[in-house]
Length: 419
Image 1 (cartoon, rainbow, N blue to C red):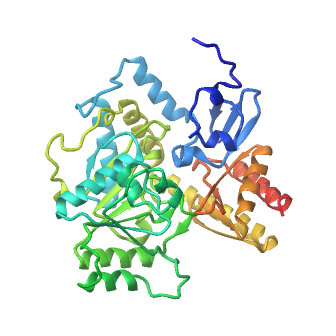
Image 2: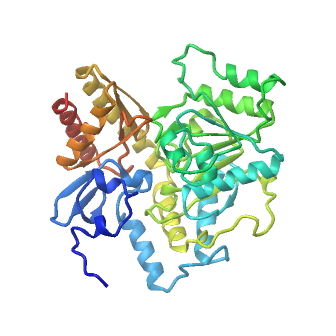
Image 3: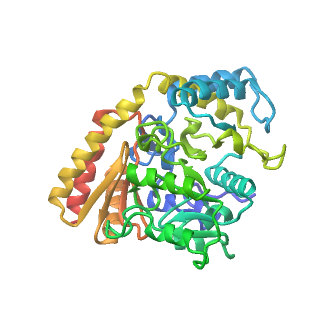
C-alpha cells in the first residue's frame, strides 16, 4: 500500500467531484459548538453548520453524552427497520414534543439516511396513492442528487450530472419569480383547467418554503396558503421538502407552520439527528400509508445512534419552545446587521427567515469573493443561487449573540474589502 503524504492524499486518491474542500483548503481536525479548528489549531467560526445538519452545533455536549452512554452500553448500532429501544424512544419523543403539540397526525417512515432518500420516498408514495406520474416543482428548487430528486430540481448544472433524461416533472414559477407582475398561480391554474394545455394531471406538488440552494428565496405565507388551496381544489398532494429548513431553522420546528398549512407529506433530514449523523424521515397523513411491507426499504434506514441523539435533541431543545424564541431573536440580530451592510453597499440586497439568510450581489463573482475573504479571516460561508450570486448565512441555532455579532462584523468587513 502506497504511503501518501497527508497534504496530497486528497488530490491523489479522492475523486475530482469533491467541492467544499476546494473553497476551504485546510485540513480540519476538531470542532466544538460554533467553531471548527484546523490541524494548526486555527479556529473558524461556522456560518455553514454542515449545510444545515448541525443546528445544535458541533459535538453538542448534551447529545454527545447521550450517544457515548448508548455506545458504552453496547446499544444496537445497525438495525434495519427492526424494533429497538432507541427507535421506540425517538418515536415516543417525536410524537410528544413535535407532532402532538402541533396537532399533526403524521405517520413516520424511515426511508434511508439522507435527504434525497426522503424525497424519493415521498415521490414514490404520491405516485402510488394517486396513480399518476407527473410531479410539479418550482423554479430554482433543489431536492437532492438522486434521479427522482434531480427530476424535480431546477439547477441545470446539477441536473446535467444525471446523464439521462429526467422525466415526469413540470416546473412552475416560485413566489416572486415575476417580481409581483403576474398574479400568483395564474399560469399553473390555467394549465390545470385547460384540457389542451398538455399538462398531465399531477400526482403532487413539491415545494421548499425557503429555497436554500436556490438562493434563499423565501415564500410568503399567503403564497403557501394559496398553493395548499390550489392542491386541495385540484386533487394534488402537497409535499413540503423541509430537509434543510426544518428542525427549527426558520424558528418554528417546521418551516410551514407560519403559513398555517398542513402538507400531505413532509420530508426531514439533516438536523433531525441533531448530531450530524445520517437520518431522514418521510412524514405523511395516515390515509396515505398504503405501501406494502418492504415496498420501500434500505439497509441503513435504522440508524440507531441517530435515534439516540435525535431524541436527546428534542428533549433538550423542543420540550419548552425555548429554541424557537431564541432563533427568532437571533434572526432579528442578523436582519439588523444585513440592513446596515446593504445601506453601505448599493449592489446588494438581503432576505431570509429565522437563522437562514442570504445576501445577493448584482455581480455574481462578488459573492464568491466575499466568501473567499471570509475564509481568510476565519469565517466559513458558502454561496447559493443559480449563479452563486448569494452569500448564504446558516449558523448553528445554538450560536451565542457574541459569536453571531463576531461573524456579522467579519461579513461586513469582507463586503467592504471586496467592493
